Length: 264
Image 1: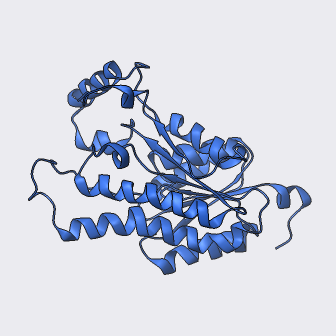
Image 2: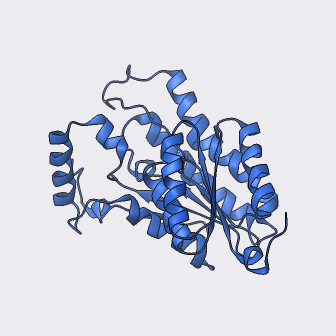
Image 3: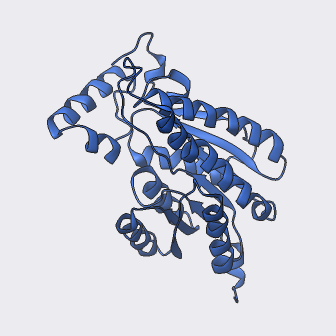
């Protein structure tokens, strides 16, 4: 592998779950800022291909790597392919996540298997990816990890109790990793509220989704509904610019957390 001086200096970012939604927005935003991109996906190959094309249209080198972050061997394979292709890694965006929609008032809606699956991806998967990336990140002079968490991990509101619990665990793990990987690697998390992605569109009808957007926007002090691009902006800042910031959980919800009661 022969890299030019410019390529050696160009940062490499891995985005897990990069084929759709927030992950795709992060990939294209980072590509637009000069990063070389590794798009990880598990099943969304079509989405990953679309993300790759968008990154390449922006002039970035980009590759896709299939793998489940719930499997440690896949995490290590993702890093192996990244290093074999680009020779370095500077930023890891732990975005891949799963949920199961379940009424939080119905305690019979979830079982142990639901918790195990959600935790295996949202918590253990992010841990395994960070562990696999850490030796290579430590060689970078700009190393960072950004975990895509959720306001659910703070508020307990969300698609299910298991999902909220997993994001709460991811938040505390972010603090632990930030403390223990310093000073060589910064670790932060973004905690979006409701975001306009396929998660919502796949759960709600068009009419219900429009009503939901209006309700959330009306409740938010900024009168806005968060988009994937909004989250990607914050990920870019934490990953590439915030050189003195680590161990932070950045809430991105249009200010909804400022309301005194559950707005929904």
